[in-house]
Amino acid sequence: MSTINDTFSTNSEEYATPPLDFNGDGFNESFTEIKVENLDDDQHVEQSHHTVELSPNVHITFAQMYTKFDGVQSRISEIGKDMFDYILNTNEAMDHYFLSEQQKLEIKEKWLLEKEILMEEGKCMLIEKENMLMEKEKMLKDKEKMILENESKLDDKNNVLQSIGKEVVEDED
Image 1: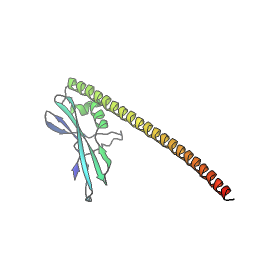
Image 2: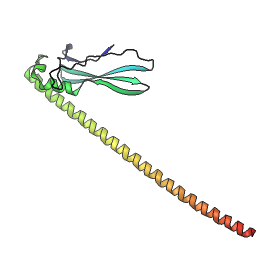
Image 3: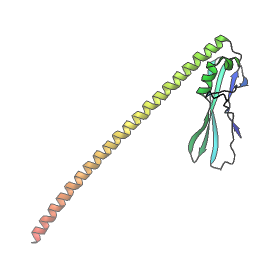
Image 4: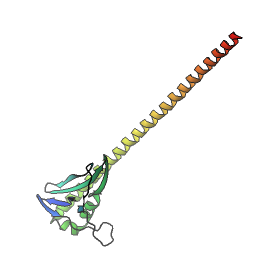
């Protein structure tokens, strides 16, 4: 069994995150455990961590867990933006970590900056994908043009062959 790390680190001590109600239905969501059982030889689970340093003594770590099957990755669960937005915008959750008002402000500013960076990276990735699609489109148009040129050359050769064939038939007569 594998467990996603959903802890908040302060001064190298880890505190479990408080229960969070993301969708406002009054029930606390938890994303602590994902059971990994009865896996075939070619399937395994990989867990990756990303730590954001919000201040010198406050780090937030969130994890993404993937299952790999036949070389295809699919995300099972992600602990990230929603949890931190909740923590940063809920005094009760912030108080859970015994932070001063100044630390809370520093964390909020740092996380907003981190979110901006993530959004910029996402925009850059979209632009790169758009450029790749445009290049592929251009390549397809070039291939279409080459095919049309080749068809035209074939038609010309067929016409030449037909005219030679007619001359040969006329010569035989």
